[in-house]
Length: 481
Image 1 (tube, rainbow, N blue to C red):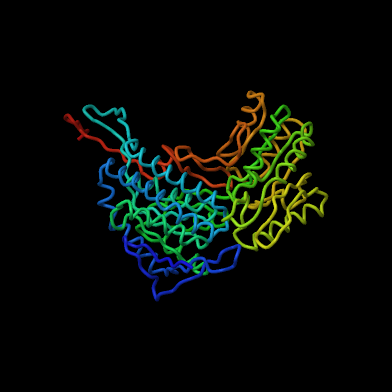
Image 2 (image 1 turned 30 degrees about the vertical axis):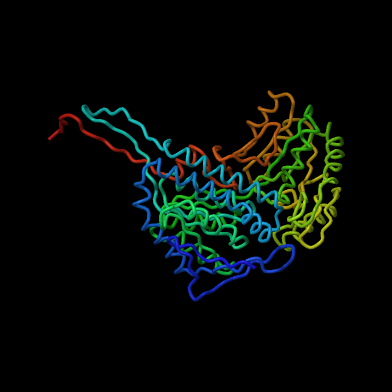
């Protein structure tokens, strides 16, 4: 068992009253981490520390911020073994998945470092003689980042990297399911020499999550909130922020479609479906929930897809398995219920056996609109197959959801594929590639109930800065009186 404290003002501190909570290993049931359970006062203290550090950090030159962020990337990589140990124990994921998290998170920090000199404004033509008008981008202030457990290092780092690059200070509200993993991000930032108070990490008991989040979001010094998680919680955070007129970036749920049109490369589509549907046990916001396949190729696709998932091993994430454990047994039971409901309503279910939090990958062939799996986000190792006839029907099926995060289209006729991609309602769409794909420089985010705003690259600069209009009167100005 490991013990984890709060990081406030660059100091490791206990929660008020020494309160803690336990995070158990989803596979073994043993206590993986005993973490500090922050109070409302602790959350406020973290924001106060970030606010106290803001003036110095925001005034720091871009090269100095770049150096810190690059050192932070190195520090994340140097702690790879610790991240793997913590991430596997707390979330049940495979070592390979957490290792991949570390690599991409380090890349995100380096990408953020490269953006510090791209925070630019422009000169603007003005009708006033002798007047120079310009726009400049300024950091917002204290940014609260609320990160989930499913890609713990990637999403924890993403919550703070671009805010820091833009000159903001941050409070990372760790997931209750991976407190040690998220606190390690704070440790890496300290290793990198980030000034005191610039990065703070708050962990909390699940029972106190609502009050801790409310204390953070409603603090008058908080100037921006970014949240990655469920749509239902995102709505609550948006309401809290709206009361303070605080801008929010929301990356929420998804039910990603992968459209397989007639003429697709079926082998390539199967490979992408297996990766997109079952990487990290399907517990990724971009996971392939729905495979919408043209009837003319459906039998071949399902046959090859079934053969593919039969090769995927499931077991302890510390071993050489493709799939590890689900985050808790309740999640496994919920997915089992989705499969039972679909089977009872006429679908063919291939795979899907369960042993505690370990679950075999499943294909649900013949999904219809009366099944729960048609609407509900799966967030587990199961993928539904919709059979349709023609491109128009495929696009209609892809858009028949309240979500709109990621999507994919497979077709060797690129003109048809691009036409289909253009008509799908999603923030992200990949042609002849999987729904699961992220890079630090890309504008990442969704539409509809998948949220709004964008992480990544130049788009994130707009999120984590505000625009000011400044004029300089260089000559005599004439007034009407």
